[in-house]
Image (cartoon, rainbow, N blue to C red; front, side, top):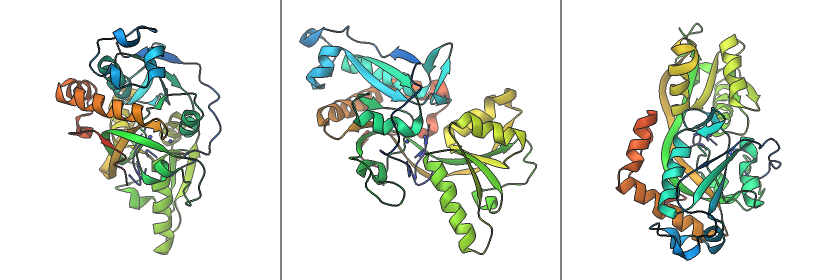
Length: 320
């Protein structure tokens, strides 16, 4: 979810992607969270200090004892995270699995509403939130899009970079060439993401220039936004770049959508961690660097065609 703040930067996940310029910590707890899948290798619960994984000792004692890292996500952002055959798969689950190998614990994902992830994390429902969440100062500090304090915020371990992209019906019947062309036009987006904020910012630019505002159509999930564009109810959709590219490649065998222009406002995706859990943040930072160094990270991105989002080194709270 991309950066403005993404699924996944001021725009974009990048899912922005913005859990972003968004109701960072002000959303209600997740309601529909029944889908779970375990990913990540390592220990069985109760292994304790006998675990031989290289970074196991860096984990908080509570997670060592449990042998499980609970992760919240919104599994609607192929190729980053989505459901297939009853399991949550994609870039993020594969990266989490690799991190689990280094840390010696299983990573178990639960899918629910994107704009409730950070609230659920800080309530203790999850240990981490990993859902193409754009790392930005707003989320770090727990602010809404007007700068009002809503909660304690979170820390991020950055592991990927993405920007905002605009996608349209195949053949681009309305002649949209960039986000600037959306003045006065209906555009679809998922609610609570950084790319929703990107549309809001663009709409203001439109009106400041004496043009009509963007007719923003915000939906609970990204599938609804895609359907709106496909039906012609919106001239374009806005999403994280890797998600938009994957959508254009795969929807209706590549015949439904196309991405126009280049990605904008590229920024980091981060694994969100409670600010009081510095030990876990440091362990995850070390684990991300470990999979980058041993080549596992590169192989995962290549598998999903997401190489453009690769980073060289993990950073904590690198978003602006």
